[in-house]
Image (cartoon, rainbow, N blue to C red; front, side, top):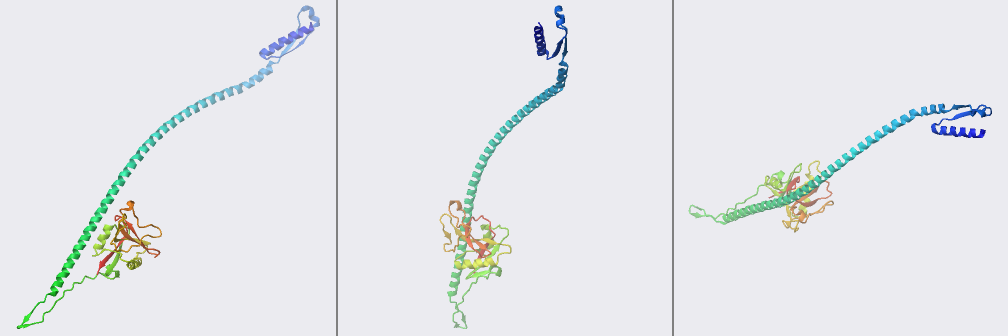
Length: 331
């Protein structure tokens, strides 16, 4: 009977402890003395006070954790919204970039078309300039030929006059006929226009700084001094002219590039006048420039090195601006 009571108590205490986590410590009082009364005085002490205290200590922690979880959720939601906004802005910027790329592509196409038109116009202008230069050259040559014909006719008239035998009668006596000869002398050039004399030619150079002398201007410069743009007729003249140019190179000039009257055809390689002296190329360039790409390079220039390392000649477009011209006067 004693054993049954203990088991029942254990069951009751265990069941109660599982339900509300309360532990009872019980002891019996005079169980044997009260068996006939069917009642058993038992003293029990509950242990849930300490545990309740411990549970109370965890409540602030749980509350704090709940607040932090809620705050973290808000932050995540905010970051999610920000990421969504960033993604939307990125998509918008990508569309703008695509639009700009498309506009840039169209502009590049327009630029290519404009460049093509510009090249075509430039080529037409180059051809027209070459034709104008050729016409000017033709007119100059015609004018020169006319001048030479006039001079020749004048000389013929002088010779014809000189061959006449005038007769003079004085006091009935016939005097010996006299012959008069007229001599025409060309004026001697001024010293500044005859810096170098080779046979019957006087040479002088006109140098500009900055470079602003195209071929037409070179012709005008020489004409104002009653001269023509100079030719190079042989190697001896070439060396003499180069030495003169080195001697008269302005201070501070490393070298000079000046026009001559020699013409060159980049397509056929013909030189005009045909007996002109040519010394192409330098250690750094390959001359003459020939072919369809260089068809406008029809005029020959002198490249003077003031350090006497090398001298050379090249061909260029008559519109190219150099820094001078070599002029000549026939005496």
